[in-house]
Length: 575
Image 1 (tube, one colour):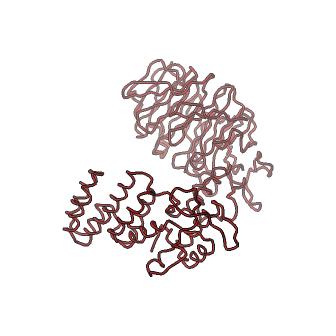
Image 2 (cartoon, rainbow, N blue to C red):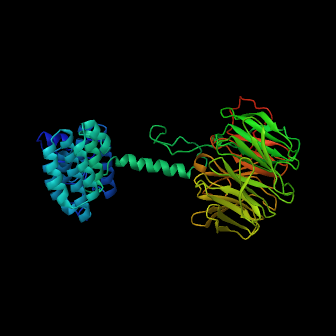
Image 3 (cartoon, helix red, strand yellow):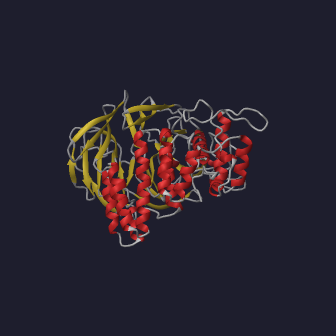
């Protein structure tokens, strides 16, 4: 009957029997609730406080499983009890709906309640449940009496009392349950009530509900956080892992193997970016083409979907619209044009060029997929619509990289003053967010908008907290000069970071560790860009001046043959 579990005395109390569970034992004399001296086992060995706590936790869990006789024997042999005798009575009366008796018990628990206001809150919760159950039983006059003569005189949470009075007009008990967001009279609602009431009592008096499960789940979460290769959206739980061994993910489960090498570009590959739904990859090259690839998310294999040609100076930056309908392609510094493609059909929607003196080298989409911002190092900074019309402009901002935040009005821009500033196109305000001592070559923002990952000239990869405006971590290993290298967040919950490097390698870090957890070799020249699939935590791509794009994934079993894969080596090698 009890779902929150600390009342192994319930059966014995109801039957009027005497039980060892009801005897005051277990808590030591140092506790302020007046409970009696330290416990000894049947062998006469004193129990430590940790032993007593463990016995109570195990007893509570066994009781939740319905093993009440086992709990009784455990408490009898250990000399412990699950909870204070007054708390036991209180629990029984609440679960039985004996509200007058529960209020008497509450007065008995008064010295043990952690605050005066807490006692008032507990009484209010009891009377609220009593009132709702009377309404469900159709006893409107009795419910009104509780409302006027018991709840209102408390002078507590007046707004809630007004809401409760409105429930008198409910036409049926189903209507009452819906409007009150209440489970109805019975075990479920009373168990939830007990969970709330327990928060006002110290755990030495009444254990928090399901306390052992809570502690085990916390241990699992801690192990997950310490696991450098944990990279799955399936959260570990009692149902999915064994408690008999620590949670460990192996390197083979992590994307450290070159599953496919794409060689369709005939010159340096400057950029790559997965679509937001993870089903496509766009790559831009010095060979003047953008290739859109179809992604098989199961096999980690890609095939050419379409090629977009005509980018005279090459395609050095790509940006998918949030709905993945459109793809923007920008060129290098000498390029004054911007191409807006329909990624679904391969048709050019608009080729935008405001002036031959412009340099449009980067772009970012507004969350509505109807507007975008673009700019470059010659001082252009525009907000445009889908037809390439300039809606707003910001004069004199020499833009290196852009990012639109999810609020729909704030744009982050790195500029030639070694900083990132936020720009609001609605009220035309701007402010400093990040200040570095060296040029910010590129940056990306985490999905929650809180963190920014910067590639800083001659310094490497830095992680900033955009809200607190502080540098969190400097990551080691990567070689970063004055080339533009694009890093990314990735994996489950953006727990991982990846960056290309001028030493031809791809570096992968866990967000909380400055040392790389993987150094992936295989490219023959500078790796310009890394993009993690936002829907497949086990897949990312890297683009290099060697003209190839590598698709990285978990290690395959030995019997599988993958075309273009190198023989297996250490963690830092392609498969």
